[in-house]
Image (tube, rainbow, N blue to C red):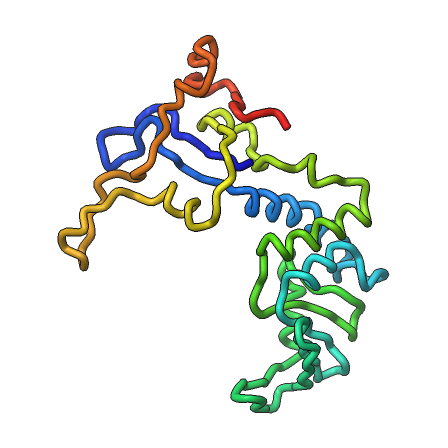
Length: 241
């Protein structure tokens, strides 16, 4: 399943948002990804460094599975980059090093200090042996299968309990959330695309904020229409899992 967030009530004349416009379209891949991120939030691992006493805390598993590189501090001024797909390693420091056309140079102590300065940092390990991640990210369904397998093996949580977008109370007051059949990422982008006048390709004009809309009254009980329109009421029109 997937979720749509529908605009309730028009803001004004077009191109302002109109009643029924699809504000957001969350397919199952995005839903399972956002829940995994919340569950594996590294800030929950605690400490100045994330999980200093447990190098393979579950929050670190997420980065091992989804990121291209792991960086490991191996001395005061040196770090090692490990390609998590190929296992290829490169050791570098503040001196410029070129490997296969890539430039490697980092003031390791300064770089780590700056990252640790941010309250939302994602640096694991122990002082002097810090670990962090970088490179390309893979949030494909195949990778998320591995992520959720890890979550279910290491916790009491089941993916079947996390099948809807985590909409907050204010979201449910301002928009109507509906359950729909799943769709791919390309369709997700198209569902929230604006309607454009492209007669002058270099200067497109937005005719409508959204070219796609839903006649939402057809999808809620008639007795609930007033509740949907009442901005003080949190109404959820999605199918209960």
